[in-house]
Length: 195
View 1: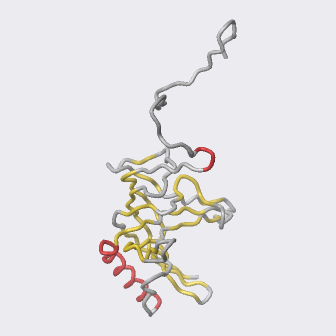
View 2: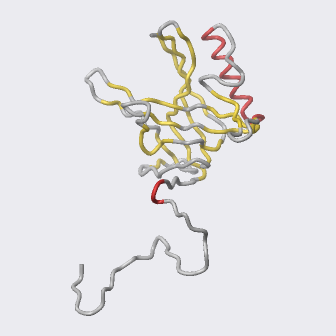
């Protein structure tokens, strides 16, 4: 297996099912991180052209213009119509070192001002990101291709993911609201002891 790599910066895009605060182990036992972004077609063309040139130089033929290991034209799930956006596939898998330890390849996250975010929030779909990524040219088992591996992510607008039992099924109404600074305390009245 031979590989070469170089790094590039993406344009701003909208996150599509990202996994950045913890690895996804559904399809990979060691875990993988994902920073796919959807970019309007016209804004995506310059990066697509650069990546297409790399693909062609590496494999000897052009990549499929609709879908390949680097991008796919986005389609509406209900209608099947193209949305006018391109989704760049930014994914990186954890690996085992020669000593048998897991090499956690979590991309570093930075805020809009370029400050490192150490406590990464649960970045959800719809967040606005820029991705600094490695263009990974590979040749394995007779197959050749190019993958985009996220190394650093700039979080420009956060849409935090809320899923499972934490998602509210209720519409907003007038009345009691809780803020981050509110404390919920128990007051049992009478002679109850403090907890």
